Image 1 (tube, rainbow, N blue to C red):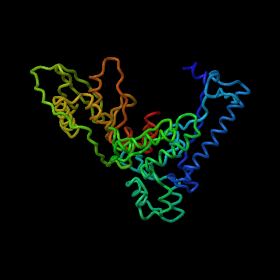
Image 2 (cartoon, helix red, strand yellow):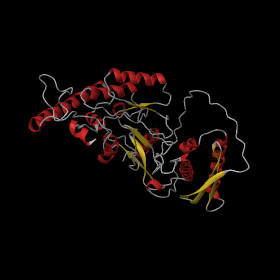
Image 3 (tube, rainbow, N blue to C red):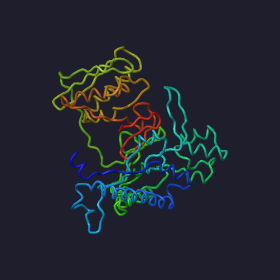
Image 4 (spheres, rainbow, N blue to C red):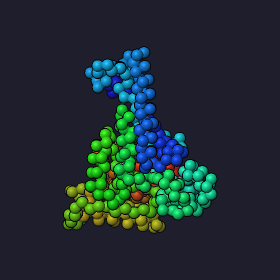
Length: 403
């Protein structure tokens, strides 16, 4: 890796805060003017970066693999760097910088940040709040309404020109997402990190259209996200939003396995916010068969919920559901009483059961899969999370899957 890196000397100058810049200029993200400006800005950055790379090559020599490369043409000037520009996913550092991510549109104009266990603070995009106060339509109730709805579209209290300016990722058509990406890609050496957001009702044809458009416009890659397509709802504003699955084919029915008189198993002690939880997993010759849970203290709500979890998992396993499927559904579920830190953090009793199953199923020495939440909830604070450039971030507490 070191040898290849030094032989090509690739770098990646890029930008973030594009959506905020457009707002300051009064240009809607999904407009022809914005697309044209994006290409103009990136062309300037790319041209200047290449010019400086030429000057560095004259001083220090071209990158070692220059001879025979695409740049090694008659009359071409040597470059110090094989690539000079890229648009990286800046989800985490954009939160630190308090600006929009990469060339992505706004995720939300207003959202709810959890500051304490029972306290919530409505956070509003600073530019929107500034305009709302200057034009006299700001109110706390309106900001809460926007946070609940997830968009300013369709809210009559907000002037039409402001609604047009503050569009979010889900207000923009997939085609406009791709056209903005292509505008930057035309003057970017490496790929442009961009997520195209689809609503839950999107079809295969919709996805196919976007991939073909991205290819036709010269994009080097594209990330698409259909709302609700993963167990972890990675782009949501309202926690209670429910999405539907698009069935692919009818599931095959399976016959319930009969319980043998004797089974082998193991018991795992898991520390939860409600106290010690003992998870017993028994197997037959076909794999995981049944699961029992015992709380440190008998009775109570937590103990009864754990018993229900155990019964349902046992029923699922005996009906042919794979053990990993149970882990996938439960791991990362959060409650108000987490326990532990880092890799040992238990976010709920359901999460503890899932991790016990995972420990039981994994070969010795293999690390458990790192997962992040489910149902759109941040594993640290339970707030909504955003998916951008293949990474999951929470604006409510600053959590990042990639940090």
